[in-house]
Each structure stands twice: as structure tokens, then as C-alpha cells.
Amino acid sequence: MLFEVKICLYLLGISLFYTGFLGFLFSGIDRKLVARMQGRVGPPIRQPFLDFIKLCGKEDIIPHDATAWLFKFAPVLALASVITVMLYIPVGFSPIFAYFGDLILILYLLTLTSLAIVIGASSSSSSLFAALGAQRELVMLISCKVPLAIIIFGLAWRINPLVDVPFSLLSFSQVNLWIMAGPLTFIGVAMLFFTFLCCITGELSAGPFDIAKAKTEIAGGTLVEYSGRSLATFKLAEAIKMIAISSLAVALFFPMPLSNIVGIDGLLGILLDCLFHILKIFLIIFVSISVVRTVMARLKITQAVRFYWFVLTPFALTGLIFIMIEYLV
Image (cartoon, rainbow, N blue to C red; front, side):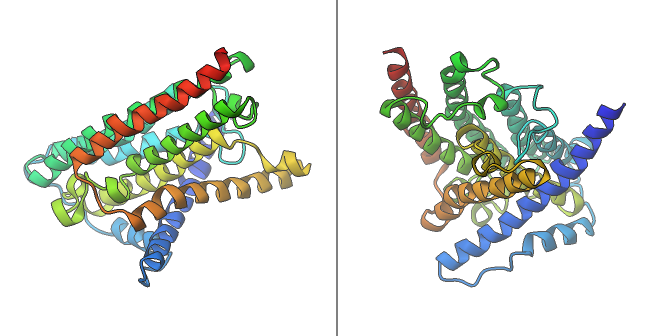
């Protein structure tokens, strides 16, 4: 019974409120930074919080031709999946499900978030904008997951001889991928890290990959029919997903805690690791989202697909080959 209480407290305290707060905070900082880099003033950093609060007070309007229960269920599914995935990803300290699940489950839960958006858009398919956005979301979902799967399986294969459970995120904290071998492995890991950054941009539909929503083209696409609390739920799910996938990048490539380096343990060590983790995910969000949004315009769906299938996937495979060559030779 005590373990179930811990799960509920972790779901509410860490997965929902802590990561939700960080997600909205970093969204506001991202918008401000992009505006400054483009020579604009930009909205205040608190704007995502204000938008969320305002949407929570608005009425939910369900389209006449929509499947009502499916339309209402989609945002709940999206939020539930990202909250659940945070049970497995460290955020400066070990998650409550650190010894359960694996990277494949995390990949599945991240996929489920995008599928929930497609379900919501398809249930209101009387809107051509929503239907077109759902088609684009599915195409981007498949395109992004291929290089992401290569990264996860490649890194798990490389650390397999060194750890007991290679598909557990905790195993990556036991090894340092950057210095565990020679120059070929270092280059290969760097290539996989760059691939992951590009996957973050696509997973979050940011900058050039803001194709499924495309407000200036299809008026919001997948979310065009949503309003009120349902739209607020989707916004919260997207904010938490940004923290989740950034934390996944940290757990895979930079899991080293600062407390071990400076020799501090206990509560102060946990606090130090949390602050260090926040700094790391901020840098990842800045590089993979803010900078990309500033310097690049939105791509066509065909251009995005070609980039992920014919540029990024071979690039990730090349990095994996470098790692394999040094390991096998």
C-alpha cells in the first residue's frame, strides 16, 4: 500500500506539477529567446502559464460531427502517457520506476503521445485542417522514430557487455560513453547525439518541423477544433513532453551527476543534481529548439520526410558503424 501511495505522490508532485512547471517555464524562455535573437521584444516568460490558466476557464466546444467521447479522451491520453513516461526518466535523481520498464517502453509512451493527437484530430475529421494535420502528424511520427530507435538500440548494444540491464536508463549512469573507448566511438556517439537533437526538434514539432499544426497554413492543424480545458490539457502534455524527451537525452548522453564530482551527498546532493539537470535540459532545449526556430523556416512535409529518411537515418547508421568498428576491431 505504501508503494502505491508513493506512486500517486510521484505522479502528482514530479510527473505533473514539477515537469509541467518546468515545461511552461522553458516554453516561455524559448519564446523570449527566439524573439530577442530575431530582434523582437516577444511575450513575457509567464505567457504560457497565463494561456494555460485562461484556457482552463474556457468552455469546451465539441464539433457537431466529432465523436464526442474520442474527442474528449484524446487529450487525457496524451497527458497520461507523458506523465507515465516521467516515472521512468531521471530528473536529477532516480525515478520511482527506475528498476521497472526499459527504453523500449519509454519509446512506446512517447509515440502514444503523438498518436493521441492524431486520434483527437481524426475524431473531428469533418475539419479538413484537422484531417490534414493528422496525416502530417502520422508521417512525422514514423519518420522521427526510425533514427530515434537506431540511437536507443545502438547505445544499448554498445554498453551491453558492461552492464547487467542495457535497456535500463540507470545503466547509462554507470558508464561514460564519451570516454569509454577511442576516437571512433567518440565520433560515433557525437553523431548519435546530433541525431537525437534533430529528433527532439521533430518530436516537438518545433521550427522547421512545425508541419502538423502550421498555424499560418492550416490554422493549427491537429488542434484546430480544440478549445477550453481540452486544449489546455494538450498544451500541458506538450510542455511535459518537452521536458521528458530532453531528460531522456540527458540520461542517455550526459547522465553524470554533479554531486559525485564535487563529493556532496544527502539532500544537498540531490538538490545540486536537480539544478544541474535543469541546466542540462535547458541547454539541450536551447540548441535543439530555440536556435533552430530562429534560423530556419518551416519545411514542406516532403522535405521533412526526406531529411529524416535519407539524411538523418543514414547519418545515425554511420555513427553506429563507427562505434561497431572500434568495438569489434
